[in-house]
Amino acid sequence: MIDVKGLSKSFGDHLVLDNIDQHIAPGEKVVVIGPSGSGKSTFLRCLNLLETPTAGTITFEGQVITDPKVDINAVRRQMGMVFQHFNLFPNMTIRKNITLAPVRTKLMGQAEADEEAVRLLRRVGLEEKADAYPAQLSGGQKQRIAIVRALAMKPKLMLFDEPTSALDPEMVGEVLEVMRELAQEGMTMVVVTHEMGFAREVGTRVLFMDQGHILEENEPKSFFSNPKEPRTIEFLSKVL
Amino acid sequence: MMEAIYLELTAMAPQSLAWYQSFFVKFYRAFLVADRWKLYLQGLEQTLILTVLALVLGIALGLLVGVIRTAHDQQRPGRHNFVLGLLNALCKIYTTVIRGTPMVVQFLIMGMVVFASSRNKTMVGALALGINSGAYVAEIIRGGLMGVDVGQPEAGRSLGLNYMDVMRFVVIPQAFKNILPALGNEFIILFKDTSLISVIGGKELLYFAQAIITNTYDPMMPYLGAAFLYLVICILLTWLQGRLERRLRQSDRR
Image (tube, rainbow over the protein chains, first blue to last red):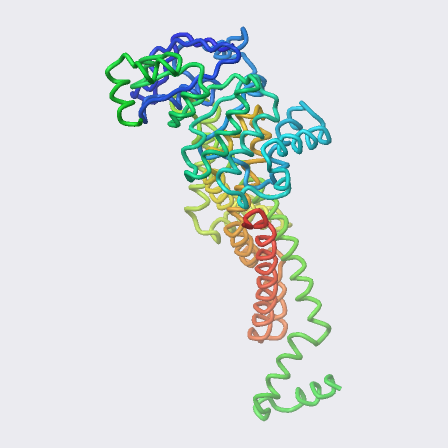
């Protein structure tokens, strides 16, 4: 589904991603972990070109999206993204947050989008919040809405950038539950997280990143029970 | 009845009048003789028209310059658009010159040098005022646009919305709410600054007040009258601003 070849990204003199190769197949749930500053988020943000790679190519469904001639908006419509700080639009009601993109990109008419919004809100148990504003919601509710907003575009792939890191501990569960359901439905997911339990339970593959490299990758069971690299062992001993 | 008293008092020697009688004579002469109050209202109307014209020009210029400056400053490091750089330099010169010279000097240059032969000094004044206001509005708008959390446009773009839609639905509405107090103040200042147009002979409230002074030889009443009208309109504008702000704060309710 996504093919990354020789991806590098630097901010000024600082090399954040160093020549990364990675392939993500449809239906995979790839969990990216690693210390802060390792380049996890930058890697994720390169996948939908929120960051422009310095070098390398990214191919999505056979299309080289790093080519400057590609209509990047059309590509992004097929990839949902969920942010650490939710980034709901505070000037709109929840309903408008969800329906704005599908309607403006002509994916749906307003009536159809409204119906879809209700359906998705019901699914995360927040249908009574449709006419509320983001400021009236808790962090966990906001993040569930943010997931729903991305799903309204019917994406083929979902990117999660530390979706639970800004939440109160008691709200982490409700967000992970939505993500778990999404995974069960077969959505392809790339998740940057510090939730090792989630990585172990939901992930089909774990990537460990450090200093701009993918140091180690494996399926979760062997990754957590039998890490190979010294840096991975050190990291896991601190977080587990 | 009032007219009779006025005529009786003006027939007497000025030194023999009590202070309140003299006050009444001045008041009557400045506002009521020959329906002069209509002149103040006519001046006020001109002033309001000037304010609206300058406002429209100021917002248009300010928006243009503010958006160019912001778009330039928010370019990704390492990516520089030449045309944008050139436009940005022009915008910077504009704001520097306008904000670095006194407004009266700008009016005099526009009225006596650039449009020296123009007979419609009122419109020259509106133009000068709009150009002046644009520089300040541009900085206000730039601050507002830069103040919107970067995560907002990112979220919009990640949903596949194009640049224009993200600006229109996400960034500008949020920026507008944040800059409303500053913008409101700017417009109240603009309203009062229309009075400076009188230095180049443009017709507005102060011009009419001064015209009355040349007839009555009394500066006190016409100036106080003009000041009163300015004050009333400013209070009204401040009230309107407060109402608008409260309405836009709707989404902040918790």
